[in-house]
Image (tube, rainbow, N blue to C red; front, side, top):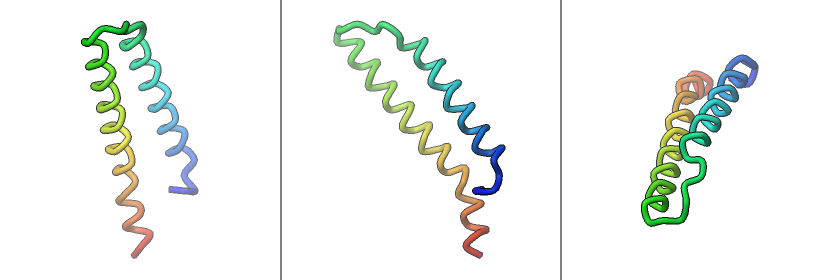
Length: 66
């Protein structure tokens, strides 16, 4: 994975697109109780997305270990 620069550019593009799309959805939330729940759901989604994106590199790691 270290030598495959296209992989890193693709992941960077995905992260930028996700940041822009989530930024537009959660722009100007406010300070009400509902907006606090919305921020919690945003953090949960982002942490889950980053977890699943990191799992995508695991098969390459297993091949390198062999």
